[in-house]
Length: 285
Image (cartoon, rainbow, N blue to C red; front, side, top):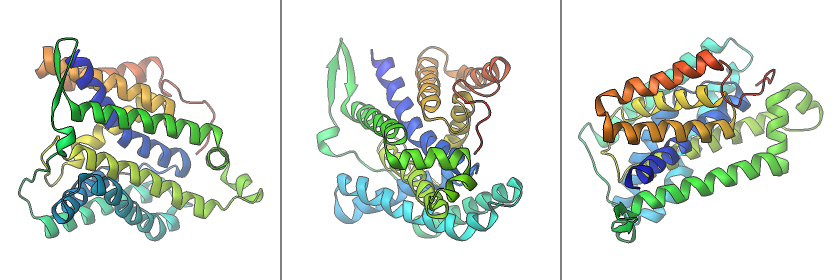
């Protein structure tokens, strides 16, 4: 049971990041290399909020909002002028944003490892089916499930979701129908950045905060969106579960093979279904 809980907590944490990355790609058609750096910025900002206020819950709210505002500025001043140009310019620009964020974190917080403690209410353990489970991992699972359901309902059942899907399919037609595509793109990028920062803040009590912590996680996110299907939330959920469970069981039974197993899932998906498990053929970003 403990392996399953650990796998689910890893899956939900990966989903928070991959979901933000996949909605940005689905809406803007941008492969955002800066997503991992924004995750790291969320972790450090959350750490700083806890240092200032002593409240993890306040950090969980304020940190993602602050980083989302940074994401809005990135979209407005760096990506917006490049939407009509070749994708290589967007890739180079987001990579440049990674370097800027990394340097900003180094200047503000330095290069030493840092740690953030979970709040007292989440720091204990519980017994489930004879296994000792940390309450914080159950909290991560709960947050991930709640956000996955909320995102699915928003995208599939609301007017905003309808506008996002319409703009993803054909932005020019959506603009002709009166949708403010420019503003919607900014809001979607901010939403994706919010999820990345939220994931960073939630991960901070589990992982040491260090410069470059976003590089490893962004690789997993790209694997997830490729397996699940580019721009597909349902696919991101399933792929996150696959990767999370693979890592949990691999850590328990074959720690040296975790990387190989993860990439094997990616290769198998590309061979059997190159467009991803849930990708809609013919869909345009």
